[in-house]
Structures are given as structure tokens and as C-alpha cells.
Length: 153
Image (tube, rainbow, N blue to C red; front, side, top):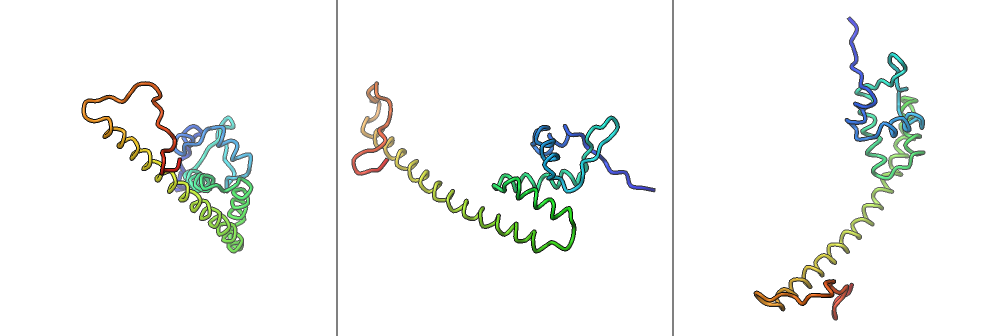
């Protein structure tokens, strides 16, 4: 007896992947799917679990900054099948390098932000101590200065 493959509607796939229906149609038009999206009765799109799994890969690659043309090229290579693994590897290595560089930049950004949070927390703690127990800060000019003598903004 033939195995029956469960299919999913475009709405179900959108819900499962977090992509909009519009994004799913766009990915189909751009040739990002490895297998053609099947159509059910009345021409409605019909997706498989393999389609959802592939979309998971696409979502991660896009979230990591892979440009659509590179994602399309990767899908083309996968669609072609065995024999082009070196090209797939090269494409993924190149993207790996870009993501590694991006992580380095983001780490620098996070370090600066963490430092600045500490500076402002220290400033506010000093203001609380200077105000003393039961004393309120003077009203007006509620902004904390961007910098104080001896600190940088």
C-alpha cells in the first residue's frame, strides 16, 4: 500500500514557520524551494514536512544575513543533487566568514553598550546616595547628563 504524505496549507506553513503567506509566495517565486510547491484541488498550494524543514534552513540562513541571491544559489545546488558538494561548501564557508565577522562587530557593540549601562547605573546610584534617605531629587531637568567630569558619554 502506498504511503500517504500529509500535506499542509499555506496558512498552516505560515503558522509553523512564522513566515507570512506573502513571504511564502515570494520564496516560491524566487525559486528558493528545493522541490516545486505542489498544488491541490482548486490550485491551492500544498506543502510537505520536507518543505517546512527546508524553510527552517532558509529562515536561519536569511536571519544570519545570507542575501537572497546566495540563498537561491544554494537551493539551486541542492536541487541539482549530488556532485556539487564542493560548490555548496564554498558558498557556506563564505557565508560562515561573513557571519563570524558580523559576530565580532556585534560583540564590540555589546561590550560598549554593557559599559554604558554600567556608567549610567553608577551615576544614578551616586545620585540616590547624594540625595540621602527620605530626600527627593530636585524636580525639573529630569534628564541624567550624558557625561560627568571624569566619565565619557
